[in-house]
Image (cartoon, rainbow, N blue to C red; front, side, top):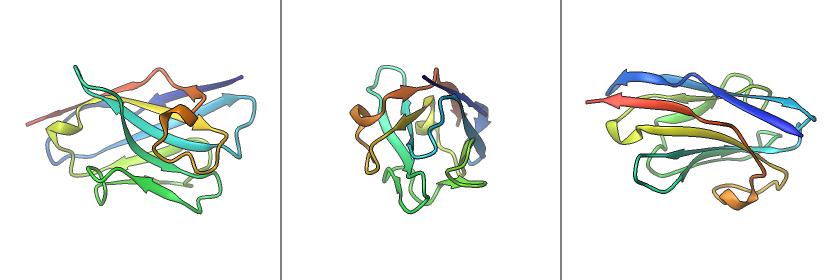
Length: 124
């Protein structure tokens, strides 16, 4: 079994930055793809970003491209998501997820392990 825990969320003003982390414990998932998803109040969960375990491929939602990026030692544990130039529409609960399928990308059904989420609130 794998446990994922997100951290780094909080309240920030528009234009500010946050860095989310996703820490994994339990059975090793070194060859898993890590994805980030978010869910705003009253909306469906949506894809944010994903990175393969070998760092060969990354994918970002169009809405966050050029603002969000994987930082630190990329796909190593923990995985960091640097979020810059935050906008009020980035507000939501951010979930980290892990998938054994290499090209999982934005396919939420491919992710088998999920963290409890961390709240990100961007004020205008």
